[in-house]
Length: 100
Length: 367
Image (cartoon, rainbow over all chains, first blue to last red; front, side, top):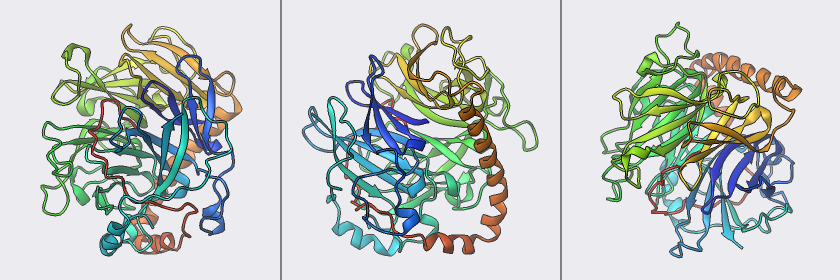
């Protein structure tokens, strides 16, 4: 279920897909939705007590999200930092996005 | 670990500015225009004081100086990872103790704070670490919007928590609906996400010193509300939603939502996007034409009485019950509970330190 929402420079919409453990990107024009982080599987570190054990980045019930321009001086084409309150992992995740 | 609290401050500083990539991003399809180049984790170190650790955080916002403010919903308090040191501090509330008291810093109480929005003060950019800014908090289970006048930690003026609107006397129908009312006469029912929107009649291009409205996802009232900051206590009105659970588009007074959860402002400043949680969809509200609602994507069948909606209703109520119960566990057995939390295994991701970002919080930075 969609939980948090924030808008990227230029208008693309970021949504945390809470129980899919994913960060999704939605076109503001036609609603086309693609996944930036997550593969539908909950991050398992908490349960298994391991560190750095997963091959792909995963989230754990991501909730609130905030977007800020990255501190990089190259502002126009610079990176964007996406802060996610990742409820299930008891942490804040920072996903840095770059324009392709 | 990425950050230090208390005694680990020095170690944290040595890592400042460094981040560890987590290797290739997810196998997911890249969105057009954007790629993931790094994922990092921010959290207090395991060696930090028990109360500093996060427990089910749901809200986050970044301040003008790059400090990261967190609504630690499970611990009923607001924490910050200060920039550039990376040191964590509890801004307001007492970890593990819920309540609704106003006060300074640790004297104040919250009950499952969720949404955060930062309203920049007129004196930002002077390097005083956030002083002069106001952090608004959607205090969900108190059905209130709270404000924290950020005065800084040690040596500062203190962080003063007040109630902006909602709630009312304990024992009254706190989580009800009352519209076009001010202060404690207004009623919200589990407010979640919020966003700051420039008032069009201000004529300015920025929040600072100007008039702003705070849009609030009034989740259990199935409405999006607006808090007019121009009045002394904050007048609360409805932007869209007639209160029924549903997924109808159309004029503001006819549109329906099913657990509107979070809200973000689109670049033009005249539309907002809402996560319509139990409808599994995204909705858009046009602020310029009086609040017409349209579906952006998703939705269709999973809300409005569907099984997923039922599950959500059950989970929301279980959450509420657990919250009432946990006040006894947490306040009477706080030491025991936090000892348990301290034994939680480290998370899986390599961590980085705080960004020493210096951007000002833009209008519309939401959570």
